Length: 160
Image 1 (cartoon, one colour):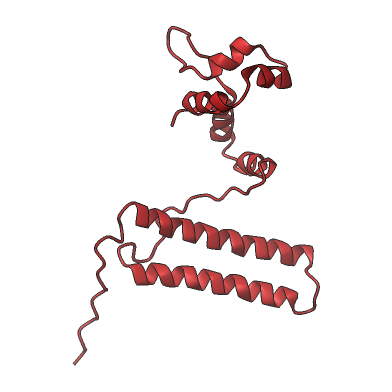
Image 2 (cartoon, rainbow, N blue to C red; image 1 turned 90 degrees about the vertical axis):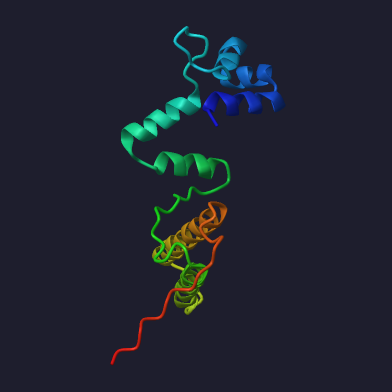
């Protein structure tokens, strides 16, 4: 989906007049954001396009993290095909279970003294983010059909 398409959908449910007043901008500018930017100059660069350009320019995902936190969430980068056997469901499932076990181990270790330090909290957060990323990768593989034709890996032939 293009940014102007998203903004058009958002503005269908929001009052353009209120948005313009809240942002101290004209209603016409808000409407322009919901139009495609063309060579004829119909639309104008909207905030979403500018944020995307800023992230691309800096390469710094803290911008996305900040936006996600302001919206009450947390940014998780999609995994880049790091599955050991992307066509087999069992190894992929095992990886999720292992990541969850690793998270529980970090939590148990941190909670052992009934106190969670800042360092321990950061460690728990890091393991949680790893688990969410691995699980997202699994879900994406399912959505892309990578697990449609399940095959178990062949056992190696016995050595003589």
